[in-house]
Each structure stands twice: as structure tokens, then as C-alpha cells.
Image 1 (cartoon, rainbow, N blue to C red):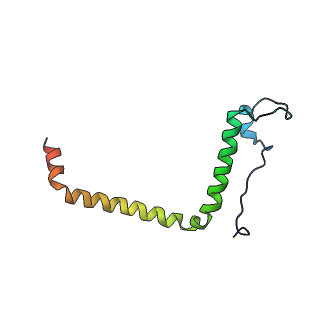
Image 2: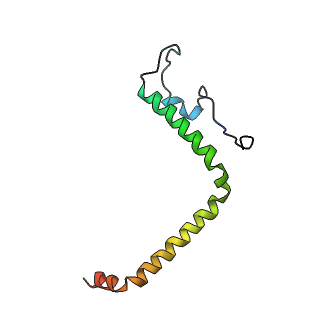
Image 3: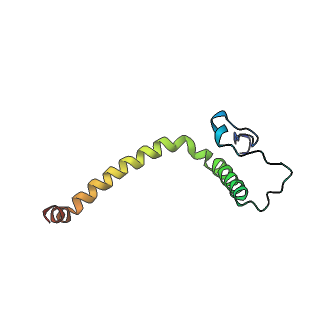
Length: 95
């Protein structure tokens, strides 16, 4: 299974041109960031993204069909609700 998993993660040192104005000022890389809450959150978010990428990969080819199915089911559920609650609908409109 690991042979088909491909996570294309951009290296941390890469900063795209459009992100340059918001880039952080130069910080000495030898400084300790163990107590930095933002760094901890980013590390945790990176781990969560990796986990999601790995375990959702078998589902990805089916996502368009699942999305279409959920849209159709939403309309069918709405139609069924209107038919089964017709009296409530009329009461609300006449109020």
C-alpha cells in the first residue's frame, strides 16, 4: 500500500513569490521554537494533513460520484419532506 501513496509536500524552505509580502522577517534558525504555539499548531496541522492524504487516497476516485449522489438525495429528501408535511406547509403560508 505504501508504494502507491504519494504525498507531494512542498519543502518548508520554499516561499512562493505571491507570499513574499506576507513572509515572516528573517529569524535565526538556531533559535529554539519549542515553546512557540504557532509552530506547534503548524506541525500538528501538517501531521493531520498527511494522515488525511494517506487514508483518503482510496476514496478520491469516487468523490465526484459521491458528491452527485448527495446532491440528488438532498433534493429527494426535500421533496419527501414537503409531501409528508403538507399541512404544516399550508399552515405556515396562511399564518
